[in-house]
View 1: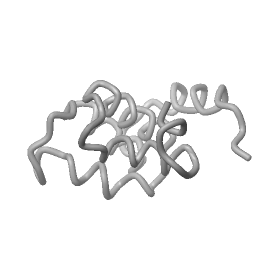
View 2: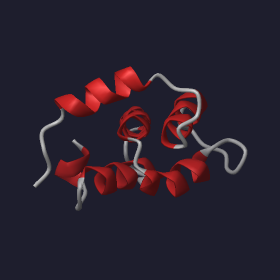
View 3: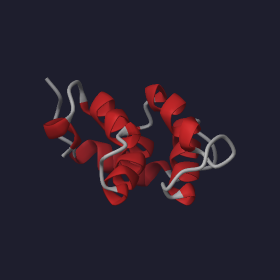
Amino acid sequence: MAQANFPGDRVSALISMVDCKICNTNDRDHAVWALGQLGDERALPVLEKYNAGNNFSLLSQETLRIALRHIRHEDINWTESFLWRWMLPNEN
């Protein structure tokens, strides 16, 4: 859904969705989760921006914390992330 609404690769589109002020909060939370599963460090600045310690946010703080831990490679279950990424179609 993010790539249908925002330009760029899947990570760029998800980052744009998280940062979108007019997008549904539930869709933004799903984008946060997906970014955590993908583990791409390009997502760190936007996720840190919405982390409660830095900025008030309607986004799920628990989802943000988990996504940040995944991207930072801290205390996570890699099996779930690996399987989720494996099922994604290749980007061209």
